[in-house]
Length: 516
Image (cartoon, rainbow, N blue to C red; front, side, top):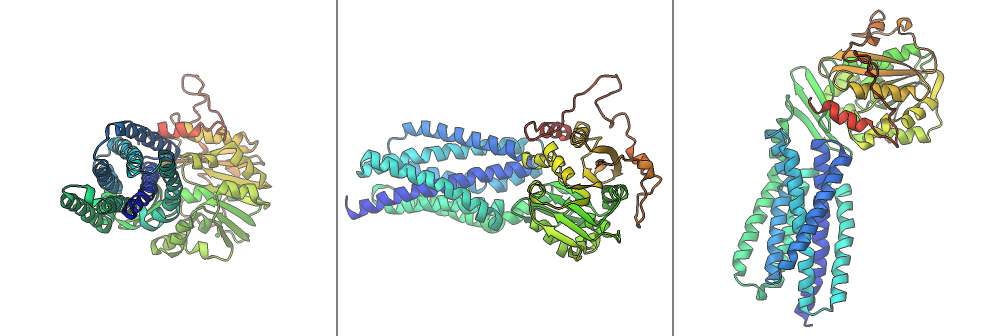
């Protein structure tokens, strides 16, 4: 081969790796979009991978019909990947904002299948072109396949450790689309002598490049306006951490914190939630020297615990440093938590709550579990018998455990399954619920080795809502929110404890909230 042919052949191998990186990035990006917007990360990643691979298979099959004009075919495939993939995140947020009727899920799966199909077209065309240049078939195929597979690994690592944390989902899509487009333009230049009407193809590519660059520069701001429509109040802070999307809104005196679209607190009534989470458990425990808070990165539960003068140490375990950093610095959250996370008694550990309980050798007088709802596999793990057994094993004999357990009204089976799961660890339990206007009727489950007598629990610190007289009333449930294992007709409903092997809570959660 002459020097030009060598350069062309080498770039084909490089191109196969680069477009593979882009394809993998789009695949995991679509999974992340589905997880964030549609919920249940395992389900969405599974569907996205399935649709993407199916698309690749369809694309590979169609590629058999592409036997002529291989370079132009490849170039316009990259043009399409750049446009469709580049605008994917931007369009997804727009459709979610303006068409909240399930069309966002349909759009995600269609675009995943489409980009997968285009990705499946790329590799066979590159292999045929490599063979045309004159390289032996087995050598060219092996090299292109190696570049493709190795590129897949690099693409996954790039998305997790660079693109998503540094650029976010909207800019990442436009950025990767630009890479696909640049590969196409380089192919046009290297093979310009073989391609007719080359100027027209460069003009088309140039128009697409300008469009993608405009999207990269201004698309995130427009997507922000789309996302604003998903929240009833103006957004004052938005960031995408390594683990989740963090949104803070404010309207008048109402500041609200959302994680991955789920409401975590409202400043107008958070005290109702946090006082029931904290004070009955503190009243049940004989001592308060060492308190463990799992979750609670907003610092408000810690504020309530610090009201007790005998508290010596609060260990707060929250996976996401970004939430804690926001709670330590954002004025509206500081007003709510009174700077509790900066108190010398508070020790903050950024670790998965399950792993923390597995590895620690410490004992606690009170354990407060203030974690997000179990709407995916990673969170479901924190609502299992295994997790509550670990918590029990680190609870002092005279101590108390309190778990936020979703709504017994909106998610009745979920709440009582959590209750059954905690009871399965051998702890005595008591069920509580309270009306929190921003959330609705919300439930908690207390666990203790001691017997729990709600009418004997006494709160000895200043509070805004809860009184000693009302505590027994918090344990009384109406007919439509009580334990469904015995309904009005005397029929029984089976509620199995949620375990790692039998994670039945996720399906219950999805069914419960689909109408709300």
